[in-house]
Length: 442
Image 1 (cartoon, rainbow, N blue to C red):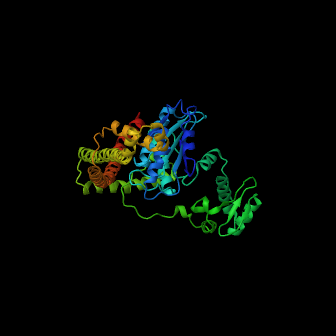
Image 2: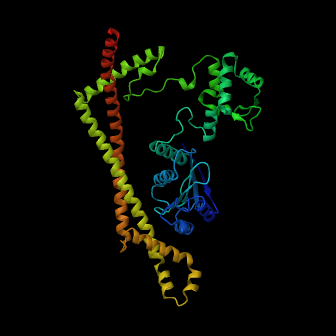
Image 3: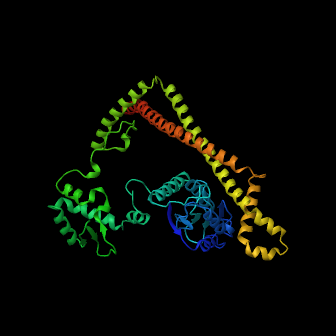
């Protein structure tokens, strides 16, 4: 599994980039990559982008760390995962330097990216939503590469430290929840529960929210942070014998769902699953009739068509995104080239080039870097700014259209895949019953 954390860089950008590019940590800089800049001049290029930004914000850049379980992934594979993560979360709009460190017992990636986009010159907004997007993207990539991931659901909202502590049976929150669950049946009311917690060795702090602290715990834990079943109102309801909030019936969902696997059910739960399967089977057959599907071959054909439509839209989106990122990069380098060419021409014509360079070193470095990148990307001669803006606007509009098509096709494909799996399960039941009868006769 990969663990991610991020923090802003406010004043030590060059030092941070130098640190992550340390040859001793990156296998002689073999595990150093960059986008939209070169690692050696990234701080200068970041500053140049910030200078032309509309909304600078307060940070020079952001530093993201992606750490992997010891022995779970090779440095090369970790670097590949880090590059995919960077391109996905930054969308080709921010310069970045990516390195993979191998000096610890666990391989980990360092990603430093500009706090301002060179595409729209607006600063990167870091918040809970953007961080969760990073976490989700990292977990998905780990899953695709066959690495372990944090199990969703029961650990939702937990930090990685809390998750691993729970797995090891040492989590303060897990112990507190277990203690509350054990004491609730014997408690008369919420106040009685708190008294019993004190007898168990917990210190109770009252305020807007009730908090508890174990004898060897440094900080208090608010009971409401344990989950929906552990707020004061929820515990009071549980003591009174009312259902847990997390077990309240949910709003009706008319989507077709998968049949339950009876092999994994036991006792009363299997009986309940059989009844649910009867309802789901009825829904499945009604859906087939509504969509005019009369046989299995027809179902397979329609499912393949819808899935193909989804995959085609997804591939087109990725192609469009690649071109948008490429064009944005050309526009960035072209703007730098045009703006600094007069300075570079003066430098070339100067009689004392060393003196001129001392006063304009950063401009000369940026111009030469831009010229080099434009040549590498085949953007010579330079396309006009207007033609690039027109193409970018058309590509953005195309991407929006493709996204709408993809979302619709994805939803339809998920429905067909669910129906097909249900039909496969229903068709398999008679075969299993026949095999069981034969086994009983033998």
